[in-house]
Length: 82
Image 1 (cartoon, helix red, strand yellow):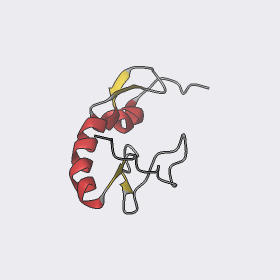
Image 2 (tube, one colour; image 1 turned 180 degrees about the vertical axis):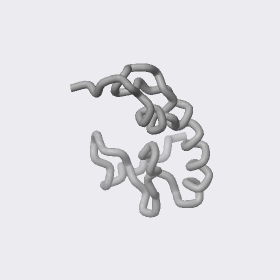
Image 3 (cartoon, one colour; image 1 turned 30 degrees about the horizontal axis):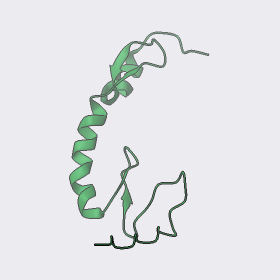
Image 4 (spheres, one colour; image 1 turned 180 degrees about the horizontal axis):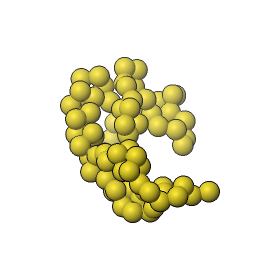
């Protein structure tokens, strides 16, 4: 039996650019695209993941949880890097 023909590629797809759907919405935290109903489920999970990522303090290079960086910067005594 012959295989069915492949569907034509979507004309909206441009190499190097993410494909978007007509009703999708971007996550304000990670930028991934979701349908509105799925975004409601994704956001709490993304917020927990985002808060638990370690990043270096831009002043003292100490590893700090992303969710605590703002508070750390208020207390950090290291001089600002030029």
